[in-house]
Each structure stands twice: as structure tokens, then as C-alpha cells.
Image 1 (cartoon, rainbow, N blue to C red):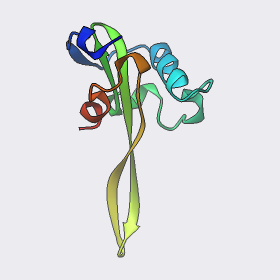
Image 2: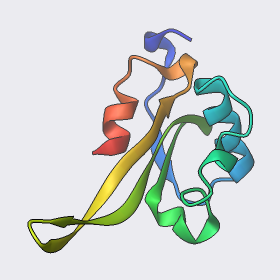
Image 3: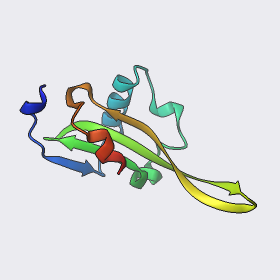
Image 4: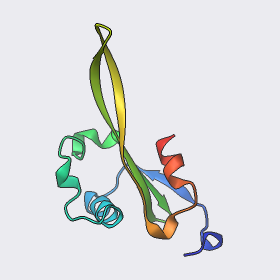
Length: 102
């Protein structure tokens, strides 16, 4: 799909199906069972930290946030790790990954 062919109707889908997400991540990271490699991230109760975007109802891009805390100069600091940033090859070079993590 050429960039000029894409109609930019981009939506964040909070009610995605985990099978769709697994298909995207397996394809982008060229692996099988990508989600099962990170069970602490990919679970139903953390859905608010999983950001999946669609273009014209097709899964296009994704990223996840993972909350954690660290000890810094004797103080506990809360932070987030950005991970699993990926874009379907058919939708690359549209800035979707950047939009997804902003």
C-alpha cells in the first residue's frame, strides 16, 4: 500500500482482540507467540497501557507501557517503560509509531 493510498482515519482501539495484536507483533518482530514472551505486560487488566491504532479498521500500529519503580538517590521513583513499538509493514513511513508513543 502506497502512502498516498492511505486514508488517514486513525483511531485508538481500546477494545481490540488480543489475537489481532498477536498477529501484528508476530509479523513485525518475526517470531511466534510474541505476547507470551511478556506475560507481565500483555494481560487484560493492563489494557489501558496497550495502545493499538487502526487505519480504516485495519490494525496498523502498536506500543505498550509498563509501569515500574526504581530507587534513585535514595528515593523511590515511578516510571514507565515504552515497549513493543511496531507498525504493520503496509502502514510504515506514516509516522504512526511516533503518534502511538506520544
